[in-house]
Image (cartoon, rainbow, N blue to C red; front, side, top):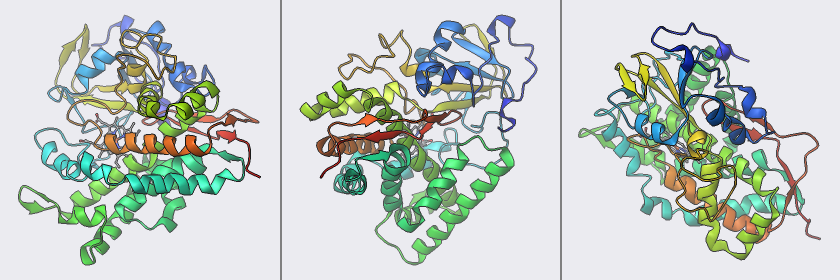
Amino acid sequence: MSNASQRAEVPDHVRADQVFEYDYFEDPRCGAHGEDVQRGIHSLHEDAPDIFYSPLNGGYWVVTRLDHQSKILPDTEHFSNKELDIPPSNSGNVMIPLNLDPPEHLPFRMVLMRNFDQKTIRAMEPQLRKWANKLIDKVIDEGSCEFAEQVGAAYPVSIFMELMGFPLERFEEFRSIVHEFFSGVDIPRRIEIQNTIIGIVSEYFDMRRREPRDDLMSKLVQEEVHGRKLTDDELNSIGFLLFLAGLDTVANTLTFTYNHLAQHPQIQKRLAEDPASIADFVEEALRRFSIVQQPRICIKDYEFEGVQFRAGDMVACPLALAGMDERKNENPEKFDIDRENRSHLAFSVGAHTCVGNYLARMEMRIFTEEWIKRIPSFQRVQSKPPKWRTGGVMALSDVHIEWPARS
Ligand code: HEM
């Protein structure tokens, strides 16, 4: 693997009882229950202090409880989004609006909010159903598929490419770029991939500026901040972020979810008999299978819950731990569609709460409505276990499922 596991000296402001080893990229706990990474990481709640310092991955704090993450993630006075790599990459690249702090952040976030609001996203429902059915058409007669790539990734990536206005012929290329970016490659390689993505988005922004179409890229070139158009650098940076945010997150959440669903016929039956419960199913899936480990960098010395954060310290909030926090969700390992007072932070919280959360939720709901209608009963068939990875975004691959083929 990369230089990710580099061990740092424990700094003086960290007490000995606050030190606990957790590897952001390949912690052995994550694999303790097969591919159920979220169940694996849940053991930190029992074994580790609520907030601890891991000397691995360059040294960083890990915040394990939902209540603490809910205070740290929105706290832009003490914690910044300027550095979101663990270990820090100091790449100097800025993803807009994700890497910006208030007050600079809001006008750029509004550019996206105007294009990802509920009304705009709701209008996409027919396209979402079309894509779900197109992909189901491709596999249904076979009676089996590898879910992660053939369906889990193909669905959100197709929707995203159509939304942005990228040509679908480039699907494989786009998917493999994102896949590599999140797979724990070393920093020089990440910077190369970053430049490839920026090259692609800038090419399309240029084309849409010359010949606008009815797509998001054409709308973004017309957008304004502070009464002026976005510069090329700003557009490329927004495009780069959307590329990463839109192509990997829904894919991975769907794959973790369907890996679970394939092993639980009683949940399949419930969804088929009671499609109205699919919205709750999606919310429970987001809680039980949260995938992002959200970093921050401390920018002002700060004492919080007995921990002394120092400016320059990296901090990670594994959002799966918020959903798995038994102080907030009783019996958190159980997948319970009817759970009362469900709490999770799958989309983070505060100024940077995921702009795509409404789209992501709708993609998952519509996909499940269509899938369960057409393939109400399916199961997992593995010759070897699925593969998983952690890091900034947790992922699952090689999930093989089958169902009775149509004659
Ligand atoms: C299940 C799917 C998804 C998950 C779990 C997810 C998760 C997240 C998280 C945790 C953040 C956090 C930020 C922070 O606190 O710094 C974020 C930000 C963001 N996400 Fe998502 N996301 C998903 C889907 C999407 C989609 C489909 C899009 C758009 C195509 C999107 C666009 C964004 C953008 C633009 C931001 C930056 C917001 C800002 O900085 O103001 N996301 N997402």
